[in-house]
Length: 281
Image (cartoon, rainbow, N blue to C red):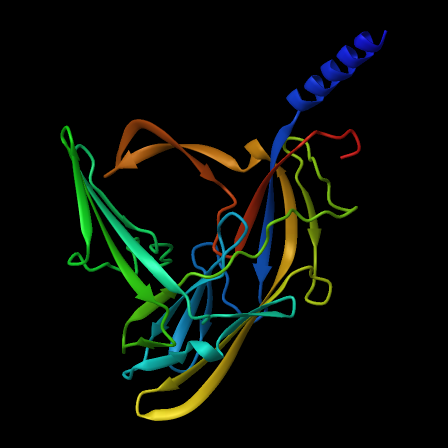
């Protein structure tokens, strides 16, 4: 009798496990005085520079590019720059030493990359190029040649952005766990996403980017602050956010297709999760 009960319980667990479905939780990040539209990131125009943010990633990243629009160099004092998330301050400078690695692969396909490469919201190029004269190793396999180079880089206390140029900063993740709320359906049905809205006071996530800088030939430290908050959280059935698009090259449709996320936007980020559908949602 006990064996039959155990077998029935195990079978039930297998059935429940097989019914697990995937979902996306999408976060909207807002700021009242930011310029937000469907083609651009969140942009702030300051006296000497423009800051452009891009949060889109798994878990959200406070990635931003600073474009120096002035005719002078700008010096950011990273020891006085902080990312504040729900009141907790995180230093931009903590004295870390990084290992930069770049990889060059040549053959039927040629790619280059770096462990510190990342998002550039205006051009599809990396904001950092490694020096090819540092220690390197190479390997040839068939028609493919691969070379890797590494460089030890100390985190700078002062970051200089020359006139009419930009630098991109890649910062910490914002969320590791999905948001749960009684008014937010945890397992929405296909075609029926569930959303909940917030204002600045009720938001579960508030972000402050505090920067300190000086201008060339002027040592006076100037401080600025950009504020954001999560204004909307939506749960989607996984297929509702995924589109299948045909690849077009130079105006000619190719035989290949790619999967894109229709919620992708610089002022949003997402978390992917799995759950067993509930009859209550």
